[in-house]
Length: 258
Image (tube, rainbow, N blue to C red; front, side, top):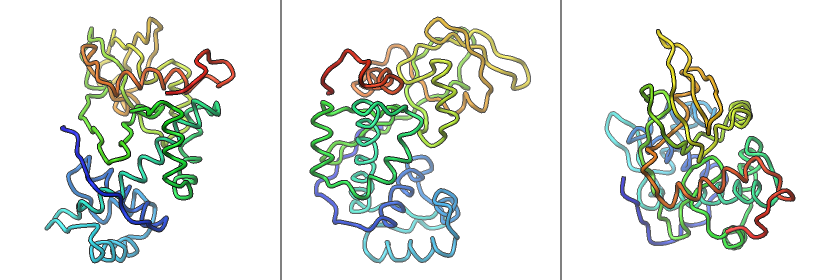
């Protein structure tokens, strides 16, 4: 998917509105539109509340209704969603690389801080980090002017035996999953080879940077990967961020962030 560009900064919004727009962006990216029931599940709120908020956001010009499918963000809504997503992912990166937070603890911290941090603070953090292009979990960071590259990736579950890939991304929302992945060195940038697959949806045996690991198919379906031939800027940044995600700042040899 080609990078999308937006032009003007969005208006200041309330925390609930930012959460709604961010959730709708995620659903739209996956499914093309966001249904009321999906938004309710993503935000853990009642469908009736979602209906009211969606009506309000559509009236304000943030959403368009898609017949029989749900809603999509307008250009205004997309700008607002990407602004919040940028803040969240810059905060996660700063927490891991500068403050030494493990990658399984930064999501909740960033959720709280993303609504309070000013754009000026976020841009100063980004500059101190060297303007990273991916967060510690491999998710692309939108630029300050609203450019983000959302690419489609395969998952570990899609591999055939003998194939070698590079890990790109995993969701930041399950701390237990992230802790387990860190234990088996399955983090963005890791080189992974599928060496065996159990029959009837059995476990997958992997070689992760030369170490054997065994994962179930459900876990494998949550890990995004790319061909070893891919060398995008996002991937290169992800490799650097992944090594920082599990290493305290005082132990890292790199003194200044990107």
